[in-house]
Amino acid sequence: MIPFNKPFIAGKELYYVAQAVTYGNISGDGHFTKACARLLEERFGIHKVLMTPSCTAALEMAAMLCDFQPGDEVILPSYTFVSTASAFVREGARPVFVDVRPDTLNIDEFKIEEAITERTRAIVPVHYAGVGCAMDEIMRIAERYQLTVIEDAAQGVNARFQGRHLGSIGHLGCYSFHETKNYICGEGGALCINDERFVERAEILRDKGTNRQRFFRGQVDKYTWVDVGSSYVPSELCSAFLYGQLELLDRIASRRKEIFDQYFRLLSPFAASGLLELPHLPEDCQCNYHMFYVLLPTRTVRDQLLEFLHSRGITAVFHYIPLHTSPMGQRLGTHVRSLPYTDDLSGRLIRLPFFYEIEPHEMDRVARSLAEFFGVGERTENERDVSQRMLQNA
Image (cartoon, rainbow, N blue to C red; front, side, top):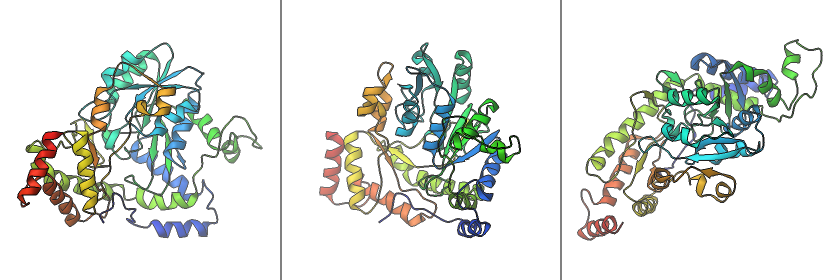
């Protein structure tokens, strides 16, 4: 089998985990948790980074910082993970779904303004596949209507838009270090705070609603319960593993670019023949090569190809089911007009196996399997006829 994803060790991850134990603090906010936050702040130009147990936790903290009132609205794409919406629903806000761009599958910046009402309080751009949304236009809209921008940069760690790191542009940003991401620790995340007015309360919310961080800094003589928060501090063991990856940001990024470029070379002939579409990377975006996906002509062909690849031992997957079509999305959310690109593209997308240690021969095998499916190269006459009928019927 070629797995879809495979966790990896790039450097000193296990050494740092053992070191964390010897330091005598594995519960959180120890040496490595602070080191991870400091590295992200310095490398990405973020005012304050607070490490969290997951990106979901970071999104929930961001939603709490917005002080939503019941009925307030948040604009976001429907083509995203459930946490992007649920974090805000938990705080009483109503998700308003807008369509994505057909080239990047990011939120369409030109559809945002028509979704704004007197109840709108925030915009949540999702940087799909590590390709930045049009943040300059989104920030202009937010300033015009006095809205808060929370970047869902779960897939965008170490990617940039016009030279600025994703997560450092909006008022708040959220990272993921889940095992499927570029930099991993199993489960992990970070809240990026670029507007300093959020810092003090974010520290309180993260520490179970107490002002313990002020106590540690000697600003109060004791700490106590001052707000409604939760436990949003990651394990020091996770942070130790993560630090071993973050100190190799450039090496891991370079390796992922190699994988992406190899896939692009192997599959370009299929795109030239009109059998599939390849990812689009805008010139103003410096991608982090989070994934490699292809778009098939129809949903039927997509489903047939998935089944075919699985039969060949290749674990390819589709991605999000649009939130506006989900039971909760239909009950709690709303959307302006139709979402044609979201409905169409979500049904035609396949993500190919992509992980740090994938071998060239494994990518070659993926490409050969696609050739076999489409009837390119050596196949029996019957197999070619079946393939052509599938495409014509679809």
